[in-house]
Amino acid sequence: MPVGLVPGLTKSHLEGSVFRYVQETLGLKLMGSYRVVRAMKPGELDNSIFTANRPIRCWRWSRLSIWRMARRWIAHCHYRYDHGGIILVNNG
Image 1 (cartoon, rainbow, N blue to C red):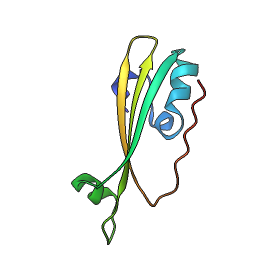
Image 2 (spheres, rainbow, N blue to C red):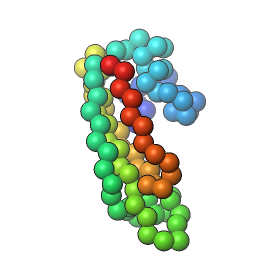
Image 3 (cartoon, one colour):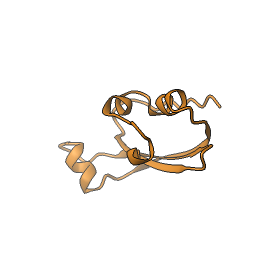
Image 4 (cartoon, rainbow, N blue to C red):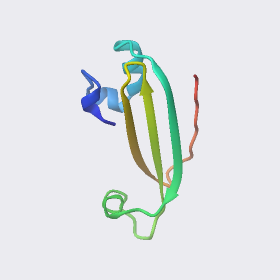
């Protein structure tokens, strides 16, 4: 999440819904988004964060968001494959 692009963003917003904050508080309209989810082998950083005593796989989420203000951002997130499921909801 490129926090420098979102004025007034705090840690509590990052722990909750950044998109709710951007849309409701800042009044910006999300024009669309594009998501890619793929399985991948973890890199050194992933291995240092996802401590495991065996080889693991990761999910890599890539998201491109396009806002009415003509700004775009790309966010990449890595998750251990064995930590829950994936639910995608797109409400517009």
